[in-house]
Structures are given as structure tokens and as C-alpha cells.
Image (cartoon, rainbow over all chains, first blue to last red):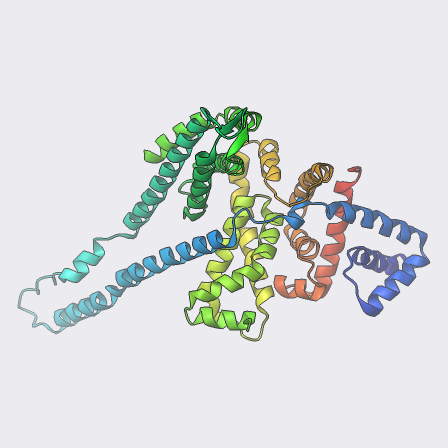
Length: 259
Length: 187
């Protein structure tokens, strides 16, 4: 078989391994592989690799948030975008009357009699003055401040919760168990709040992202505990908090976010 | 009666946000896995899915009624994930050491699989695949992800990525060989 033709078959063998060929194309590829020991070996190797690749947990991963929370996040983003849009339109709208005003002034200047003194510069209208006084970067700063403040508050509350978890009460219903009903409930509330934090994927709180991830991980662990939990499960969470230096990281990050 | 994707996009185009719920219910898992296969980070993938639906709502009026909704959403998800991956590459390198963070991320890939052995193997495979995918050129990575994770037909991959069918085939061939080399000796 000529090498050039065989290269084409190699490609088809790869596609066959991926199950990406259909009908006649697939039949032809299979017939070729049946008569080509090297191709059959290659097909087996590729299939083995793809079987391993099929074990990648990503293929069956579930989103860490339920649909209602995700929908709430999308709606929050759309609300934020809708709130920003009129502001932008309003701020650019002044360009039209201001342009007309400038053209009018220019026309007056051109038509004025030569000896008369130049017309005084047209004072900006009150509206235009107000609009120009709200610069884009100021609004951006305000939005950043809100995002940072919300993130700091969330981290503050998560830290309070982790401190409470470190000193659990004995469970009245079962011996050698600890009562974490309130903490688990509070963790679920905080996770729902985390889901609604808007803007944490942006650059404004980029430095907080690793801490946010760690906090979310630990909150999920607490949220999954039964109301009367085993002490060792709680100790495992405490070890995780300690291993990640989470309380100290939260402290430093909230200070940074609060400026 | 259940509304079709086209009907839902039509409602979004008229500003009816109520249509987002059923549309997201239908597509969010698939898009999440797709974004996760690129980004390998549950938070980033979730943010990407959120942005896909924000963009879908904002651009619904410009949607070409002749095309399918699923591939359109896929295209938004792929473009957004690639963009996010590029922007995040430098930042991720500057943050926590990769191996430490990768462990945390993989531990959070909830699959519902009860077998611990399979989970351990899955995690090992996940790490190797993440590393192998990072080593692929962007085009090969995209076609492999769409075939392996979204199981799209070659013609659909060509449509989503705006490539010729020949380019899809040759890219997929190279990608699968590279993946095989990287996964060799795993088990």
C-alpha cells in the first residue's frame, strides 16, 4: 500500500476509534483495519486510551449549584447590565444636544459682523453639566466598591461560622455526637449567598478567589453534616481549616477588601 | 405543551426572562461539562455557564432563526471558555501552585459515582487529561472536547467552530494521538 494513501487510513482509524464515522465510511474503515495488522493494533491502542479518557469525572460532573441558584445569578447579572445600560445611554445622550449647541455657536461665530467682539462662550446647560460630572470611571469604582464590600461581608460571616464550628455543643439526642444543626443550616445560607455574589469572576476581587474557593469547599463540608454529627467528621473539617490556614487567610483578605 | 428551544429564544428576544428557566434546565448541565472540560475548575465553569445564558438573553434578538439553538449555545460556551482560559492562564500560574489547586478542584468534581476505586482512578485520569488537554494546540483541544465531552457529530463540530470538515478530521486525528501518548501507562 502506498504510504500517502495509508496516512488517510490512519486518520480514519482515529475517527473510527472515536466512534465519529458513520455508514459507508465506517464500514470501509473497518474493512481496511481487518486487513491491516498495524491498523488493528493502532485502533486497539486508541480505543484503550479513549476508554481511560471516558473515566474523566468531568464527563459526569454535576454543577455545584442547583438550577434555581444559577438562574438567580443569571437574573442578577441581567439586572446589573440593565441598570448600567440607561446610565450609559443617558451619559452619551448629552453628546447630541451638546454637538448641536457647539454647531450653533460655531454658526453664530461665523455669521457675526467682523468688528463686534466675539460672542461669549456658550455656557453648558444645567443638564449637560450634571451629565458630564458623572464620569465612567467613577461609576466603575462604585461598582467595584460594592463587589468588594459584599465579598468582605460574606467572608466575615463565613469566618464567624468556622469559629463556631470549632467549639461544637454535645448533641442531646445521641451520645458522642455534636450538634451542628444550626451551623449546617447557616452554611447552606452562606453558600446560597455566595451563589448570588456578582462580579467575583472579574478582576476586582481576583486576589480573593482562592480564599473564596477554600471557604466554599469547607462550607459545603459543613452543610453536608447531619444535625447530630460524628466528632471525627467535625475534626476532619477543623483539620482542613487549619491545613489551609483559612481563618488567617480570611482575616487578611477581608482587611484587604475593606481597604 | 413543552416549548421548543426556538420558541424559548423567541420569547427571550421579546424580553421575556421567564423563558430562561426552561432553556437553562435543558442545556445547563451539558454546557457546564463542556466549560469544565476546558477550564477544569468548577467555579470558573459555573461562571462561564452563567455568562452563556446572559449572552443568550442579550443576543436573542440577533439569533439567526435558521440555525439550531443547541449549537448556537455551544458556540457561545466554547468561545467564552477559550477566552476565559486564555485570560486565566497567567493568573492561575501566579496563584496557588497548580498541583495543590488541581487536587482541590478534582475533589470537588461531584459525579455521584459511589465506587471509591473508580473515583480515585477518575481523579488520576482527570489530572492526566487536564494536563494532556493543556498541551494541545487550541484547535485540537476544541475539536477533541466537542467530540469527547459533548459527543457532537463531525459536521456539527465544523459548524460550531466554523471550520471545514477536513480540518475537523485532521485536528481530531492529531488530538487523539496526542491524548493517547499522554495517557499511556496510566493503567
